[in-house]
Length: 539
Image (cartoon, rainbow, N blue to C red; front, side):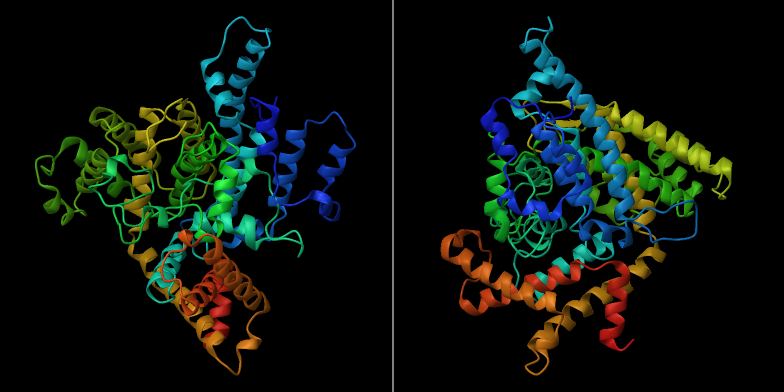
């Protein structure tokens, strides 16, 4: 059974709810829709969720991900280098496997309730109470989860957020997850009849990895809510609020509306399908992206092995040294791993354990540092087999570490990794951060990419200020300025509490225009950003 199993018909109706009447759907029918319409016995849930999946696959925002950087730029090394599209497809594949496994538990529980089974399934019972899980919804969430990434990936995200708050008068800033929800509900469109692509509540809820706004955490300090009691993605910056969030104030009411379709899910907790997507994203990033680093030759055996061996043996005597002193020596072998452990223990004492962390370091040191990287990747068949074998082995290992929890910790979710797998993903991600993202060559390229994003934003802002030439700005940008400004004023009229920053007319017009500029720049591919920058600057 692939459809979502729910506790009542009313709940099912809520999860299948769309924002707008579907009479317009006939204009946008896919082959799958026509085939399912011809089969009256097709399950309603499967039918509706497949429609959502098709809409996402045909979205231009999904297609553009093929030209947006994942971590390292495209190159001629190896059969393929991941971009945001191939990453999303692999997240979708991992999510499908996890969801299918959980759906089997769900079916067993439902069979017991119906009297066809003599034993109950505790995991299935928990999933049923929470609203079930659906393989198609999980795949749709995976397809959609990176739609909000601007050109140059996380770098572009950070630059847009900084410009928004320091130059554009937009206190909410920019966040890729919130941008994803905005694309699905406001920017993308099936036609001019309504904004968004009219997805079911279940699929809209499935992309809410951080189900709150930035403003919800504004003014909340560490004395009120300590770091270990904050959801993952919320830092200790009362002036700025949440570091990660899934909706801007403009879409906050819609976020609350779709989450209301899951009454058993606690406040600030992901839906089951969203938690599955989030785990699949972590696994794909931790393992699949490692493929690229090995093929591109950016992971060096001596450096990686040296870091792991030094920490395990404590050859640098870091164990007893104070953290501030260690932070100044982070490049020395073993120091960065020690800093990672200390930060993990501070933020996640609910799951962090030194012995389990050490076991994860030992395993990854052996399988990555001492085995896979011991023989440099040369593009040959044997090298490719070694990389593929490493990837398959680790995907399966991490997938076996999935657990379902009825009452999760605030920094976790109903579907999470067990303690062993959680620490292993942590260490695998450390390899990315320490040995790839900090490379001078990547940093040098990112300096140029930062300049491109900055000058695009400032250039469009100046263009809209030009009384003689503003009308010749890109049509979509002008339309978004009008629509977003109108929506901002409307929000002040009926939900002023959702606005962050000043609320006078001039400030709201500035916010509307600024959000539209960010929307426009963020919708570009890497190459479009470079080309547009070149034409606007005379390059």
